[in-house]
Image 1: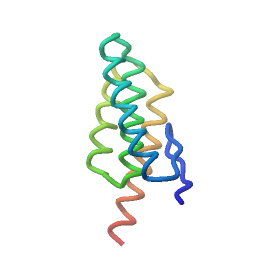
Image 2 (image 1 turned 180 degrees about the horizontal axis):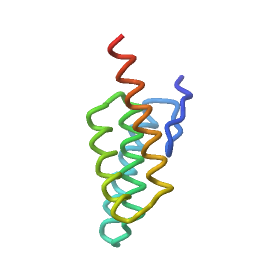
Image 3 (image 1 turned 120 degrees about the horizontal axis):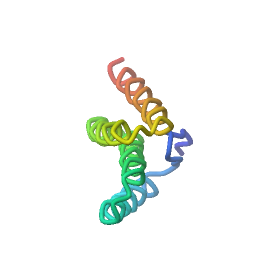
Image 4 (image 1 turned 180 degrees about the vertical axis):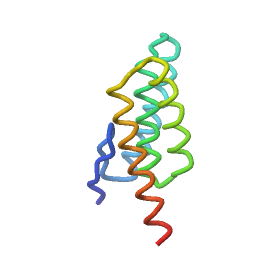
Length: 99
């Protein structure tokens, strides 16, 4: 059982991660339709966090890049900190894979 927490998403099992990915994707569509840019940035970060938990590092990095770009344009400093933490986790996991 996985008990690690990635900023924005707490997970423990693959089926939960798969459902989280699906719901975050649906929520992202709604946020886009509503023009909720802060919501979009949070959901992009959460999709990145889920991808990291699934060890889909390239996908996670892509989501985090999108989240970071939007968060920077909106000057969401609190979210930029969380994205930075997730980037640190990404790099840590990549280093583990190299060892």
